[in-house]
Structures are given as structure tokens and as C-alpha cells.
Image (cartoon, rainbow, N blue to C red; front, side, top):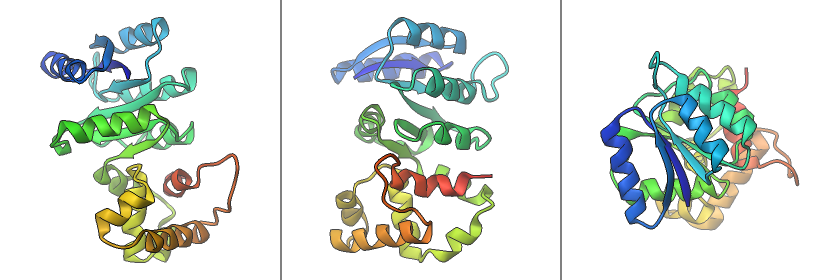
Length: 214
């Protein structure tokens, strides 16, 4: 993969770059400010950009705003938010602008580099990778709680794993049921959310976005 890293912590920025390089990936640029991120992406568009949320100058939501812009101006570039904070203000916009190729992981919950690299691959390939805690907080702020209430506990569990970008096979292994059972749960979710088959929309991601609509 070709990767750009936007992170204001020099130790984390350079350490992550070295780890990814050792694994055979090409780190095109490491930057600590949003303007430099846009310059790097414009010069050599990466497969995926890793972006922290709180960056200079105000250390509030610069990175998340930048991610929304990246998705709008460079739709072919995947964006993985990598932060210690859950900021929901722009996440709905980030997903609604095109849910494919989007990820949001929490630094404190990434225990293995293999898991992080796997999430990067999914996002770069046009998939989705959302931390369960991020999904939970997004669910908590939605006005569509009635949709969540319609799901069974098992369907909620399946939906959370879908939001992480897991396939039906991976979900079946995680919750120890058959793949056929997972397919049934997924179909039930689609039906309850009124998501008919479509050639243009990704129903698995739309099921998550349903919670994020205003």
C-alpha cells in the first residue's frame, strides 16, 4: 500500500512509518499539520491516509475536517481516522459522503499491529473499519433509536461486526455460529431497516449510516 500519515506526535508518526515500511508498505509522506497533508496527497495520492483528529493549530477537530475534505476531493483515497478520541460531529458527514474506504480506530484499543494493518488493507481496498466503541457512541447520538430497538441482541452484535468491515465468514467465526445463521441475521437487519437490494448502494454500510441520519 501507498500511505500518507498525518499525526502531530513525532514519536507515533515516525514509529508508525517505520513499522509499516518494515512490512513492505510505501510511506509517501509523514506530516504533522493539515496543510501539509493536502500537499502530500495532491503531490502523490496514496491508497490510504492515516489521519489523527486533534491536530495543530487548535488541536480540536482539524483532522476530522481534513478527512471529510479528503473524501470529497480525492474519492479514490481511503481515509483511516486513528485517534484516542471519539468525535461524532463530522463522522456522519464522513460516512454519508461515501462510506466505502472509511475507517475509524481508537489508538488505545489497537493491541496488535496485524489488526491495524488488516484494517488499513480493508480501507485501502474500499472497505470499512470502525472500532466497536465508535459505533456504540454513534448509535447513542442517533435519533433513530426505534430502529435499534427493532433489532434482537444477536442482530445488534452482527451489525457491530459488519461496521468493522467483517465478512459473513468472519462474523460467523467471531460469534461462533454458522455462516448461514449470519446470512439470516443480515437479511433481517436489511429488512428492518428497509434496505432493498441495489446495484448502486452498499447495504452493509447503509445499515450503519441509518443510525447517523439527522
